Image (tube, rainbow, N blue to C red; front, side):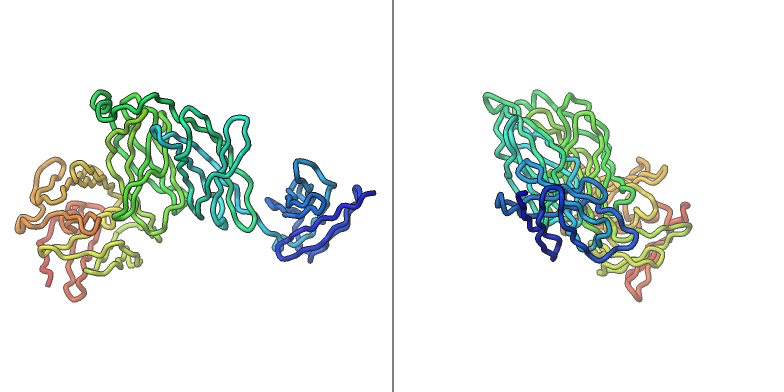
Length: 437
């Protein structure tokens, strides 16, 4: 019989097998008690006859078949008492690949990252009846890519794999087509003729079991549209498209967000080459620690210090509280979130709306008047210079005005430049503004 020789790579281990027909030698590695299966594991080996690398893929709990160059080689059976710790585990396969056209300029790809040990991702593309070829690579934790080389009126097929010391398998195949146009239209004219109504009532909620995920939902546009574009930014960064949704979809889940970071989201509807105005802007905070709070809630903030406490559990602010015009300003989400209040940002009006139960508070950047359940009231009757501000890209709100109108007791502890807020879940009579020194 003809002898076939293979070099098998098992992590740091290497050895040679002489395979004759259906007979092969066994590699014995120290026994792992109670283990009788090798799951989601492949071995890379080198075929000396074809001078090429190939893979051994798992086909059963205890056996592997070696394949390469589209042909099946003699089977190599591996004993089931192998210590799994010596195997090189491949990155998990990316999933949920989607392709969405953006105007006439590009095809946007999005996928789900299921691994924690990848070094990046490879994007491959083909046309119908063609062969896949690599067109790009992106880094670790990146789950999107824009194909700007796509040709109009051509359907492309895509697949993605995670890379590492060994590569994952491929994602699902997804396709997309750019619409063909004879002439780029006058966008300004079309926007005046066809007004696309924006989506509204954008909300952000945590994803169960994923502290670095967010679920976004919105009210659909009333216009005839082709889909939605989701945009995101953090801090003073620029808005960028992070995902998309179809015509009939009104929610999307994004994962892989950075811990303890506040993100801003907005959604636009699109039709052919035109986008609507954005929806309301919503903020979402991926807090590093979200303590469970029952009963009374106590918050402690310290001027010019980014550490704060919720019921004596320390957390971090992205911006420290400051004193302006003798009053404390703070990113108000850190006050409202523990009480279960919702915040909405209306960019066109530079307005913040805070809703808790039947109480609705409205404030505008640069204005010293606010509204409580539709009634106009001064933010500080004794100091007309107290106004909401945007400082270094963050919206800073007057702490006392909002806290008291949400039913809190506010105390100033001058010795530590500390503001203490106590929330009992019911309305309290407002107290006089304490001195700051």
